[in-house]
Length: 168
Ligand SMILES: Nc1ncnc2c1ncn2[C@@H]1O[C@H](COP(=O)(O)OP(=O)(O)OP(=O)(O)O)[C@@H](O)[C@H]1O
Ligand SMILES: Nc1nc2c(c(=O)[nH]1)N=C(CO)CN2
Image (cartoon, rainbow, N blue to C red; front, top):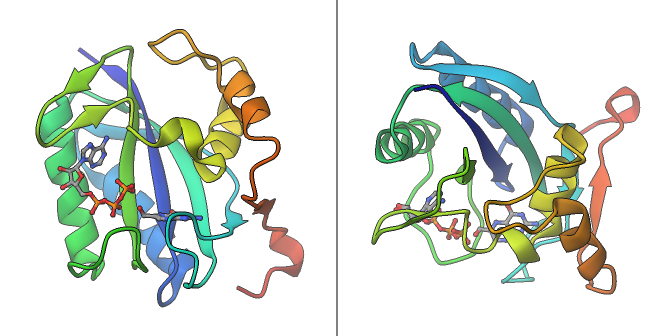
């Protein structure tokens, strides 16, 4: 069965935009993955561990016939290929790819939690998700729009990158 999946992409080390673009290309080249939508890139203030550079984040929408665990393996392989080393939790990274939503599935295994466990508190994920689908509802019934409103007073900054003036 073909499922609609949202993936969160981010990075703050090295040539980030080139690496993120390459990650999308590698995903799209996979025979069981079709990239059908992508958000703008956003500059976002670091969450979790604040003494590190700002991130570039975005979300893509794919169709896939892979099972969730198979997709996780593909995603991890692409991260490795693009030079991600083991590093501290929430610290700097070359390319991070998170499985945010996998159709309407709710998964809670040791290796995989979907919806992504920190999705609801991360503006850098919710804002590009809303850009792709402003009426998006999580399998738990919460609307992305409402979740963004709840974060209104958080310190997180998420700024769309203007491609015309963009020197990043
Ligand atoms: N929905 C998910 N998407 C991606 N990885 C997940 C997911 N749920 C659980 N994981 C597990 O998380 C592990 C890696 O986490 P990772 O090192 O990317 O965490 P992190 O990027 O430091 O933090 P965060 O998960 O908050 O972005 C993966 O090997 C995978 O088994
Ligand atoms: N703004 C922002 N902050 C983060 C990010 C990220 O992608 N963007 N990823 C992290 C890894 O878990 C930790 N903090």
